[in-house]
Amino acid sequence: MLIKCEKFGPDESGETPFVRGLSYCFEKLAVQIVKRPWTFVFISSFITLITVIRIPFTPMTNDVSDFTPAEARARKEVETMYQ
Image (cartoon, rainbow, N blue to C red; front, top):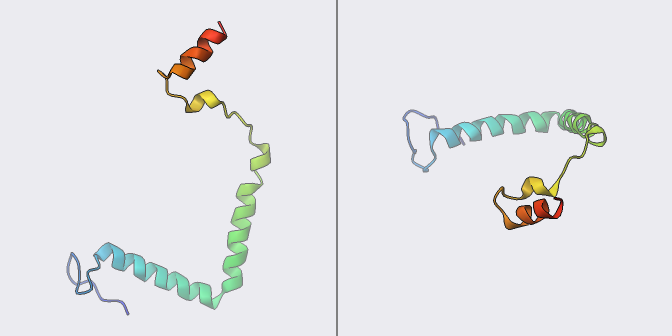
């Protein structure tokens, strides 16, 4: 049961207006999912397929030095090794 927000700040149960708003939105979303579960399964699967299809075509430029700090000893050693 949702409590109407008539004041700013926590209500009797200790929930803030932000938490009550989130609860309200998720309750409405849950009702829609219960009414049409297959629609949400297909929509989420379609979005996943569209975003995953690009992965094989993305160039891989994952250089380990991207994760090494600029002043790290390992970076300086690699720089002197390739001089």
